[in-house]
Length: 126
Image (tube, rainbow, N blue to C red):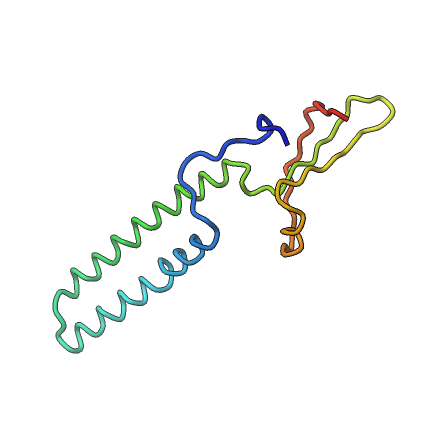
């Protein structure tokens, strides 16, 4: 695949694995820890209940902002595509389709779906 055919990944992006772990931490663990500490602080008289909950909320908000930046960068790039399906409609007798895969074919065996970008620019070199 030519370099001019792919959009450069710009901005901040997290790997899928790190994204999923951080998302779980921000959406499940932080609120649970916040609630647990706030409740136990009131039951047992632990110090700084409000401050701890506010600090955890600030961490969650900051993490959400990072996720938003990462998601926008990912969605605006070609990183989500496994390849390109080129459609050449310049011929009168038939259309020509070709598929270019960006990753090693061995990696496809582990996937449950394939996502292709459609390029109908008629710049087909066959």
